[in-house]
Every structure is written in C-alpha cells, then in structure tokens.
Image (tube, rainbow, N blue to C red; front, side):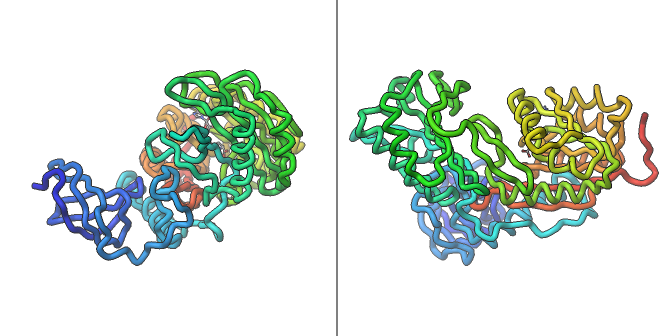
Length: 459
Ligand code: SAH
C-alpha cells in the first residue's frame, strides 16, 4: 500500500479524460496531472485509495517522445489547455481513442465505421471569442489574463496561443487606458472596482473585431478616450459595455450599452451569414464547426423532400445549413435569445423553410412532431455535455425517423445515449470525431444512426 508523500517512479502509459497521465506500479493505478503518455517520472503520492491513487510530478526522468515545447509561456498554470505539451499528432490519436473507447466500453457498441479524426492544419489561433478577467496585483497594477486551473487567481498574460495575436494589443490598450485614467479593476472579494472582464470577438471571415467591457457600474468614465484609442485598431467594428453588478461567476451582464460602431459583427460559416452580438452564442472555432456541419449534412442524406428536426439548435446554425437540402426544418432551443437570433439569421439568409420553436427538446418534440407534415424523416441532436434527456430518445424511437444524426461534445454521454438507441432498433453506422478544440481534452463527434431493417414506426 502506498502512503501520502511517498516518492515513486513510474512510466505513464495512458491518459485520462482530463488529460492526466495514467501509470501502473504492480497493478496499482496512479493518476498524475501534468504527466504525459510516454513520460518516465518521479512523483509524490498525494492520495492513495484502495485500488488507485493520485500523484504529482516531481521530476521528469525521461521525457515522453510525444512531448513538444508548449507555444504558450503559461500553459502549465493556465487552466485552459491541458494538452499543449503533447504533439498535435498525438493529441489527435488521444481524442480518436477517447471516442472509440467510450463507445466500446461504456456504450458496448461495435460494428460502426470510425473515421480518422478531422484535425486542424494549424491548431493554434483558432478561437474567435476570448474573455479576459481583469484584476489588480499586490503592487496595484492592472492584470488581465486567465484563471489558473480551478482557481480565481489571474495569470497575467494577454497573448493566448489559441486566440488571435491582435488580442494582446487590444488588452494593452485597455490596460493603458485604465492606468492613465485611474480606472480600477473589479475585486471579487470586496465587490468594489469597475472593470470585471474584457470580451473580444473576432470574425475571421470578415476581419471584424468587437470589444465589450463588462463593468460593475452603470457607465465607464472617459469612454471617449477608450474609443479614440481602440478605433485605431484595424478591424475594430464595435465597442460596448455589459453591465454586471451581481456577485456572481457569470461573466456577462444582460444589459448592453453600445459605445461605438456596429452593434453586431458579421461572420460567415460556409455561405451562411451571422450577425453576432456581445451576448450571442456562437461556435468558438468556426473552421472546425464548418467540418462538423458538413458531416452532419452528409449523414442526414437529404434529397430535398425531407422533414428534419434540429434539436438543441442554438442560434439555428445547423438548421440553416440543412434547410437548403430539406423540405422543412424545425429547430428547438431552450434559450429565448438564441431563438430570436435563429429567426433573425434565417431571414438575413433569406431561408424560409425553417421554423424555430422555444422550449425543451424533450417536451416540444414529443408534443409537436406527430402532427401532419411534421413527422421527421431525419432527426439531428446537438445537446450540451450532459447529453440527451431519455424522454427525448424515447420519443425519437416512437416516431422512428429513418436516420438520426448525433452531434456530441462529450463521448461519455454520447456512448450512453447510443447504447439506449441501439437497444431500441437503431444501429450506429458512422462515427466522425472532429477536433474543435486543439490543445484541450475536448473532442466533438458526429454520428450517423439508422433504423434497422424490419423495425416499423410505432405510430
Ligand atoms: N446546435 C447549436 C448549439 C449546440 S449547443 C450549434 O451548433 O451552434 C447546445 C444547445 O442546447 C445550447 O444552445 C443550449 O442552450 C441548448 N439546450 C440545453 N438544454 C436544452 C433542452 N433541454 N432543450 C433544448 N435546448 C437545450
């Protein structure tokens, strides 16, 4: 039995779902944060349970052949990217295996075609949205950057390797503005100070940039000065304030005060145009999102005659993407603002064969889909990390669409839901992992299920 603080030596042979290294000593498993697949390490035992324990790297004795130098100076402290020190090729393998293992072990599935993961040509600078917390250090200087993993202490850095370079310049301008005008940063503990967060959105397809300062107050003193400084940045399309006076971890406040330029910035995914406001939900990696949507469209197998339901539709991106090849698309989403955005996006793109419905997928779908003309040929789901509500899966089985396309951001809940569907007359045909978040442990998957021969609709 191992004891706390004991020093051990082990080889890391695998990596867990949070990117932690996994190694074994005489059949006993250790989880070691910061250690990579292939490392030989000296580690200190933090906790030892009966069958497994946790340890911390003390020294890397022989580095893993898959280790690379992280692009970012603060990748060890920052909670954002867990896999930056792992070669990109190995990251992709890790994610491919993660999806496959979940489907096989948790889902008990087999017989599907697993396609090689779609990675990025350049796995850096891909994020179109960054939210920088603002604080003050012990010398009273303004700091901005990222929270250290699982804490609220700010690592002072403006250049994030997965976000555009221009952000660092924008952050510096705002810091200088605050210092020159004596504007303080928000302090979580005293609930005093003004500037809480800086949101920067970059529309890659048009080059437009939006800056929104989240403030603990109703106005920003000397805002003309800030505008004067920021408008010189190429692409600066809109500047605004978001009012958030609550004691909360939620970043954005719901009231927006517009200061300069346009209220939205324009971006394209494929040929579709989107107007994005500070509060809109929008996919953070538009390049890979297009890959996911193209795959969803391919798997939907549309000929122009189908009725499609897009459940968990957000601002309607998938619905609009499918509408060109379907007779009718119904989108369902729980957030009222997203439904409003979805309707606006449909009309901005002159798409008329879509209808967006506000509500829970597991309630709206069973209630409305059996009506004349609404019976689905294809159902697409793209749920949050917790996966689909079982009530919804049951309702899908009952109406029995010939195809279901499952877009997932969590292989574990995907496996659980696919297990349910395969027990109810569906078969998993194709699985396409997509790397939407290089450097992190997250992976998306697009899955095609079809109703097996011989089963008939229950209605
Ligand atoms: N398909 C969209 C959004 C996917 S994110 C896109 O590609 O951009 C998942 C969405 O599901 C979020 O917008 C969330 O608000 C919504 N959601 C969460 N629970 C829901 C439920 N029970 N019913 C409908 N929508 C839900």
